[in-house]
Each structure stands twice: as C-alpha cells, then as structure tokens.
Length: 191
Image (cartoon, rainbow, N blue to C red; front, top):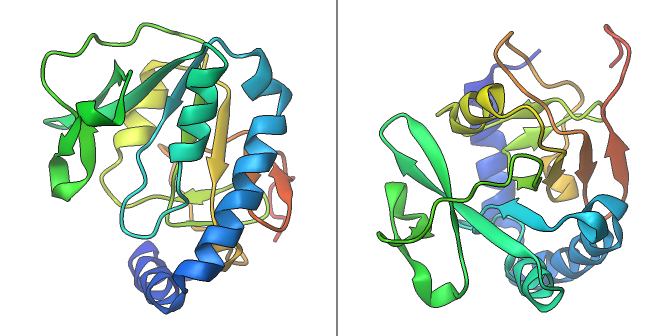
C-alpha cells in the first residue's frame, strides 16, 4: 500500500494534468448525481465545502440547495477545529486557511445535527475509504458529530486501488464520481 504522502503527490499531479473542460463536464455529472440523491432531496440543511485548487466544484450544488429552500453551511478552520457557518451568499466568503474560501466573521454558526455532509478528499478507493489532505479536520469534526449522512465527491482520477487507513479515519457513506456511485461497506480485506 502506498503512503498517504505519496498518494497526495500522485493525485496532485493528476489534478494539475486535468483540463478545465474535463473537470467542468465531470462537475456537471457529479452535481446531477448529488441533486438526485434522496439524502439531498430530503435534507433541510446541507454542510458542504467550497471548492479550491481543482476540487470538484460545489457552487451549483449550493445554488440548487438555496433554490430548494435548504440551509447551507460551509466550514471555517479555527485552530485545530472546523466550524460550519450558515451561508446565504457567495459574497460572504473570503480567503481563509491556506487560501481556501471560508465564511467571513460574524455569520451564524450552523446547528443542524443531521445535515447532509458533502465532503472533499484527495483520494478514495471503491470501499469509500478516504485519504484527506492531512489536517484531520473532517475526521475530528465527524468524530464529534456522528449523525451526519456523509457523501464525498471526487473525480474518477482520484480513485486508487486501496486507500491506507488509520483508526481515526472516518469515511463517507457514499462516494460520487462522474462515472459511478460507490457505497461504503466493503468487507475487511477487500481490495
């Protein structure tokens, strides 16, 4: 199994090699799949990241949630923790930790314990095991907030044969790429 560090480097190279056209087409397919999920349609509140550095674009999902009358919350890194704040406009974002767009000061913290969580990642395998960016923010947040249904979105070039895991890792229930939907629940030892 490859180390997380080498996987991050490999996926960064794949991201860099991907074209805007390829990603835009994939974004449209992924967005359509997310919007069709029963979990999305039934949710009154969505916790979602703001795309950065060639991640799967989330703005169309956020706009669709607003149009459907759902609350939308996005994360801000505060020390070693991540807090979600209600977002009503993209104008309420500013560059934050590592230059990633985050909610500006003064917004209301979200309090939606069972909100649908739409999360990013560096790499995934077909069992929905996830390699994150290395900060542990999502793992720590989800350890404390266990009631969120979790859906990750990624490009197919982010798929790897088997993701290395640690006991503290928390994985999405579903993973959506432009090619298919994966479900968490591979038996142990499955590759």
